Image 1: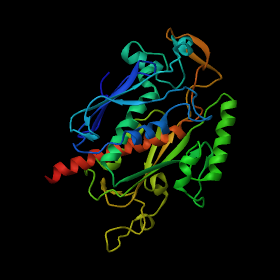
Image 2: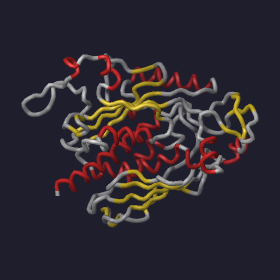
Image 3: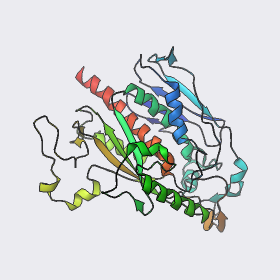
Image 4: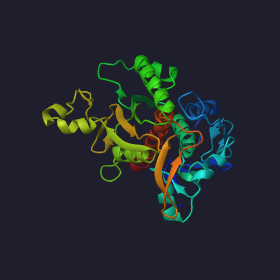
Length: 353
């Protein structure tokens, strides 16, 4: 399997499977002398880990990160940062019933066709458990990017979504299990997810992200536009089906006279339909984007599918699964955004050198 590395200068390579001994990664390109707060990194992992509330998978994993290299006396050395996260609560027998069966909308069929075999235990390499490695690397990137703020929150679960007149309160995000920035909507979303779970079904949602204090000039004007790399980062996350930044698809309904962001004397703009990016390059305004997640494909209901002999069969999901992924996706979105910004900041330094 190729292409396990993300980034150009600030790079992350990950390894491991959902039910293997451990997951892990190597971070290359992080400058030396960056002070590393291990507790802050662990806190980011705790936001993503399973079993943290009644509305997520009940797999119990401590997700404790162990750093193996690249950090000495609390600072990065400039060499490769190696780390692992041990798997401690696998229940591989929960997946024995799908050994020869292709689950609808999973990677089972495509992995089998591409590689000739697959790890059916929790999806193996295709499992969203791999994103724990991204959260570690993103947390390291955040500590390199101390002046830049990354804030993601859930804005929609199924048909329940934040409206323009709803108050966005960042302080509310970590106070509710949905990670919604509005207390009232959070209760609605939580109750809906619980209802969906009782039905043996799943539901999708949307995560919004705002990046503040991004310097002007990050991004390349042709193929490596800043928004293109952010889109690639987000679309590489399991279950993501859509990415839009700035005015997004709503911008297609507007006239140019309404959509244009007019400048003020200081170079900032009166509106921000561009989403903080113009010509593929950051303009100093807040970067904002949305990421859409599909419903989890594993249902606790009977579904018709086929096995590896092409025979029609019936299956029902077993094991521990999220009825909705968006609450745990929030720190993953922030992590991938941090990796992109860190990479472009280093690329900018080499361009100006």
